[in-house]
Image (tube, rainbow over all chains, first blue to last red; front, side):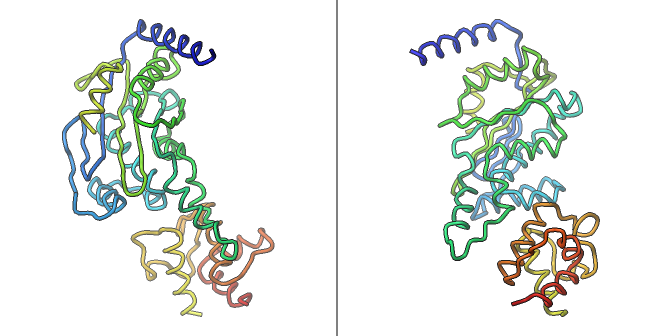
Length: 230
Length: 84
């Protein structure tokens, strides 16, 4: 009964949001299978690396991202950091909007399982019990939002969701709600997933207006964009 | 002492993921935190773990940390004095 009620209110909420102003996807960056795409065009390819982390390091060097803390991050944060850096160089929303009004809404499927496993190994032997503080601090997936926020001094609304797969319907509804209710002026959103050398990042910016690149931020358009970048 | 300081530099580079740095890039007397190597509070915790894991030394009084972790040389001196 509660589930039916929830679905009813979610549908009603969506109808209200859909009747409100339009918002736009104003830039997109995806990182997957040794390729980095910006606004649907491949910008960097390196398929020679044996590991995902080596690929991310090669991308870090290629884009000359000068941020020594990158090397201390776990793999999930490295992936999020590189994708967000390229996205925000493409579309400098941090210069257009007050940093307190920029939201960051990101989701994934594996949570922080990659680094959780490493931490588990460090604490599994009671005779050799040396948990690493630098590993432990990354054992939550929303830390990647913190890394993006610290780097760009963003102080707006932020939330991290765990889904089985990218949920364009939920993401578009949630983010449109934030923008239409003036909880944020723009948003960095998407999907950043890393587990066992498999990685996928798909980050995009959402704004209420656009110049040049601009795709209406609806479930259908977002799904199409994600599928094209997958 | 020189040998221990060199070993310590290698261990710190590895433990703190100071990628791109070599032993010879680290001045034995430069400050580890702030302007020197630019380490942060999480790195300080890593150094405490390093001392315990690699040298069997526990820092019983956290207030001593500031003096011990001032530089590679002060760390090496502390290890020499307290190594079991």
